[in-house]
Amino acid sequence: MRNSSRGAVDPFIVMDVMAAAARAEAQGRHIIHMEVGQPGTAAPVGARQALTHAMETGSLGYTMALGLPALRDRISQLYKDWYGLTVDPARIIITPGASGAFILAYTALFDTGDRIGIGEPCYPSYRQILKALDLATVGIQTLAKNRFQPVPAQLTGLDLAGLMVASPANPSGTMLSHSALQGLIQTCHDMDATFISDEIYHGIEYEAKAISALQISDDVCVINSFSKYFSMTGWRVGWMVVPDDQVRQVERLAQNMFICAPHAAQVTALAAMECDGELQENLAVYKENRQLMLDGLQASRGSPLRMGHSMSMPMSANSQMTALPLRQKSWIRQAWLSRQVLILIPYAVRR
Ligand SMILES: Cc1ncc(COP(=O)(O)O)c(C=O)c1O
Image 1 (tube, rainbow, N blue to C red):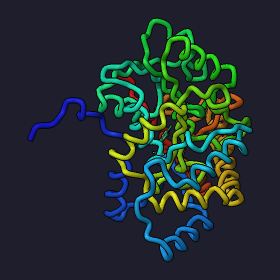
Image 2: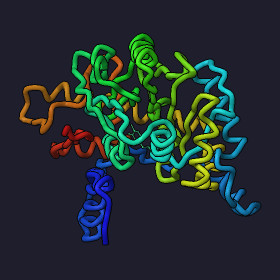
Image 3: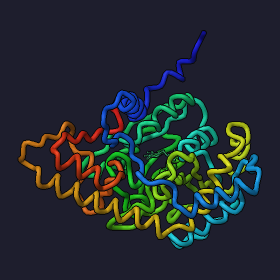
Image 4: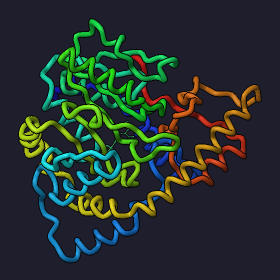
């Protein structure tokens, strides 16, 4: 059978590692799972209870393509609570994870062959999804001195139709300050390039609050998810915020591509937004893990413990370490104390 050249994307290596680990586990090997960046915890208790109730009382059929109105309203409230922003719920679209939002955004905003900038290293699927949609990826090599984020001067002459940025970023964990984000957004506006902000790690902050691109401009596309802070990776639910005049275009695509995000996941997500106590407890565990890792890495300097790759985690004040597994403390401690080799895999392969 024929297949497409645009479909010949690279594998998402962590998913291959996950499958290999599962095979080893099935053979009886004991695996400490650190391959995927996801919370070791389930969706919050209150969220799972809400889903049980919804399953017993409703049909959980299709929702509107844009998502459950109550969830869109509640996310609007989150923008008020987290950033002091008023965001019209009409601009909020519920998606099958941030991953589904990338497909919707790239398809809604760009045409075949358009050039989209990504700072490298970055979350590797950006490049592969762009390729699958026949868009041209322009890799921008980021530098340690810029905290592994692109800077406006690097955008000159690239003829970009869009720029994709994440803050906190994966794998570096670094965040863009208000002025750095503003500089990038302004440069994109000047170049008539669309700014897309992946804000999936917002909420998982240790030393400073992450800045949303929406605090700077409404003329941006923001993508977020229930996967990380809300501890709901497998539920496949996220959201995007787009300018008013983009909503109908995204809606038409969502209707045809996905019909809607999973109804059960939307119900669970809505209730998860009321479970801040439990989510903050999770965060306290990540904080301890992070400190343990920072202390251990610091102590290992000059010791026989060798790093296979240059660290993807700058040891600067705002470093987030979100790219590292957010698993139970005991697992990290176990690996650390037993002096097993910790392999920190950079997610992005430079081409
Ligand atoms: C930066 C970044 N964006 C997006 C995703 C995918 O998110 P989702 O589970 O919402 O599809 C990940 C997953 O690790 C990620 O690290």
